Length: 306
Image 1 (spheres, rainbow, N blue to C red):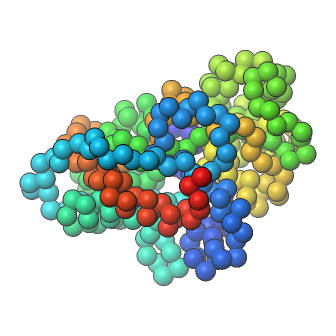
Image 2 (image 1 turned 45 degrees about the horizontal axis):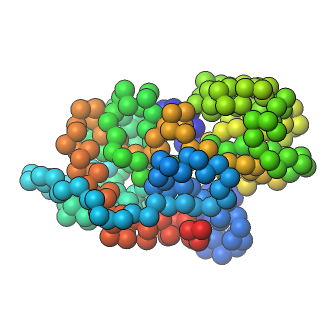
Image 3 (image 1 turned 135 degrees about the vertical axis):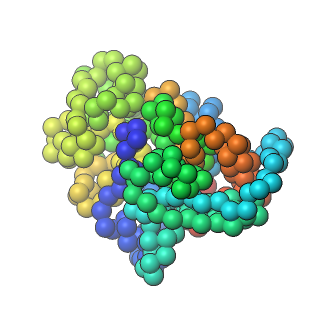
């Protein structure tokens, strides 16, 4: 996902899977597993380039929790989110705003023992709404990047996603390395950290830049390029969606370099509101340490941790 852009998801089959619980029973476990994200990853996992495509949550030790901040005068938190990115935030079949981000916001309020309001606004209005003081925080799968940090302050990340390579299933290329990809034509979205990473660490590949991830994916499906390199969540949705026509699959990875792909996803607050950042960081740690985070994680990503 390019910095500052709305998180991308694909195809109605995935929307149905997440928005309508009854549909989940019709989806095979392997498909559910492919929708994994890497939650609360340690920075040291960047070296695990050949890890399996599974959820890798952080195992919180609970022995270094920050002290409770001053909560005097705080009786209510108002969160804003987008409403069109299941399973993170969406309207369910009865018209209720729900999702992983929504429930995490409510868990934070429960931890702080304050009233909670979670409302949706358009993606492009998230930061302006914070700036106008109409909400305390935005919990909408916003990536912590240098560009985003110019507009808002962020909590510590509460999940991270990897960069991944995707190739056509018919290509016999399993060993992904700078040497094995030498001379291969790799598609990437122009102006992204993925492009910069590819040029730095895979100097002998032929980089093909595209205006959008959709354009790169189409070129891969059509055989115009050998692989695509991009955001793992977006590529997961494309691989399992209608547009890909089952053409492709992950190869190698994941890649988790914060210099190029950002620090992960955090909760945004109005620029300069460091007190709110501290309050939310404290609450996130408590939610994780008490097991509530794991409970929510398993609810929306019902698969084995390993």
